[in-house]
Length: 318
Image (cartoon, rainbow, N blue to C red):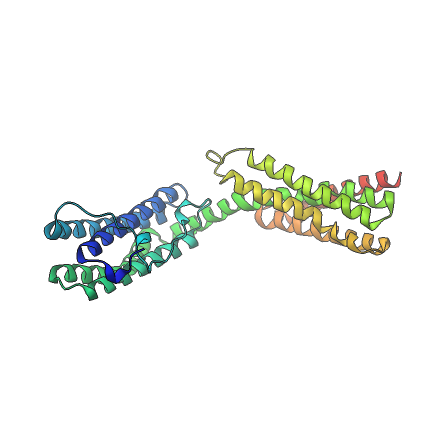
């Protein structure tokens, strides 16, 4: 990697052009990826893309005047001092807070680059342009706020907030809830059947771990392979699968851990209390995020849990 102070004026301009091209493409990616669910925010980033395009053209015109048509390839990763960027624009699902934080960091870094570059160049024309661009980067945040006020009115903000919530529910809450319900309910029968059949905490613990991990793997793959998310909007399949699998495992592990207690009666009592807490959490999540009435959610979850628990008790006691 080159030290910034070792760059010639020609190389500084070449690097500035590359930076503007990269920022322009990132803003274009943001706009393209957001336009379906967040059209107002997409319009903001499209406006910022236009700003970067103007900067790039001005830099290109000055470079041709000073150094001709050939531009050496110098990228940000070739020069020391730049912060490594997390590729937020490639993430699934896209989060508006992450995107806006990334854009703010990009503008700040570019401004500091122009200020430092302008301070060390002796050419009047280059110094003037770099200084002007540094000032424009300072006002770019104000321009973004102006665009936000123009494109993202109160109604649009509420609409986008609701869209963000729907995506969060569809891509994270829904697969997580499915996994939590499966892990908490489906593992009740084998765990408590083994516990009552053997009346040994250690045996119930082994069965519980095996059932929880096995259910987690099965549910994770089932969710990941159900669809690729392109038509349903449910997000990246492997992310959904991971969320579903982890929550399934946690749902079963919760009422397995009490069997670490050697005294079987105590372990059994604690496990039953954990089951009731798990079912209460599931009912709350269904009411909070899935818009299921509180009473209906409680009845549905508790009824299912009691039936599976009863099956385990009957089988284990037989």
